[in-house]
Image (tube, rainbow, N blue to C red):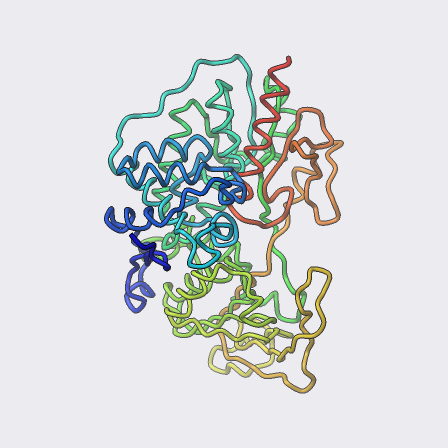
Length: 469
């Protein structure tokens, strides 16, 4: 039977409907579609997809199990490498990793690996009620700082080997960026809660409302009997442009805007979490976080949402699927455009009052692309005399984040780089004995799957270290 050249489409909510609700956009493969997609896998011998996966999931074998209709077997294969299969199936950038190296992709469209992973994980969650069982204790105790993807992965891998692991989370709900950063319509929070609960069944303790560096220090974690510490505290310090008007009411970092909506449920009418709703919104940036912020603003009732990005659509770093969904929902992309000032007013009856107070407009300048920068991307250059204003009520800065300096400032001897990222070796070991780190706390804002990969590397190194004691 001839192979289908294109991957099977993902069923989704209609764009006009989903733009006004927070229900999941992608509906997931049916069993029939999953079987069709699995049949496209060549099961090639060199397996480039596995090498391109940061956590090295045995992709061909799990897809072969799907082909046979053994969906639980497929889940068990994935679970050998990943502690968060239902999450990764939804938010991992497969197109630049496993699917980007898929042999089918040489001549045709790659196999929909992420879509199949989601199908398998959802099948397991919907059909298997048996709890995971905690392995026998090996007598060692480890602390994990942060319950995001790197921390949960490290905790899960260690728990499976019999370690007593306690995860410390600064916020009131476990999940890190998975719960405060990624919107419900992309990653339902019940999915994250299910993954966290599975880790608890393996014996992982989760302590919320504990800020390491304030409530406890890293040194105190050792005093409590922990023999190693993994720091996976993420990158929660937002970046701004330092242009006039960024202190106006109605200007948010994407972190704050998304946290208020995702974690504090500001989109629910019964919740009194303050957030700007309605009006016109400008989101500055072109990554996945910018797409999330723009699409969230739309669902909160904005009449118009702009994405302002200083390069072209070709350089836009967000996942292509997220960009396409945003376009379908009516987000207005203003590319080759850069803000230079946010304008405000004090008198709500006179939006042209020049006094600062609330946002009334964002002044931008058109850009053109010049020579490539040090990373190979063409450098944006301002076009003289091209300034213009967009009337907006809210501005969201989605420019990236850096690690919060709190842990660095309270952990003597912990070395960081110029950007605040914790310096580690190839095993995730920091400049402090028995202190490991990974994920955004090291690299700055990156992907969920790369953070998970770092958590796996550190867990392996911690196990090797403590096994010798």
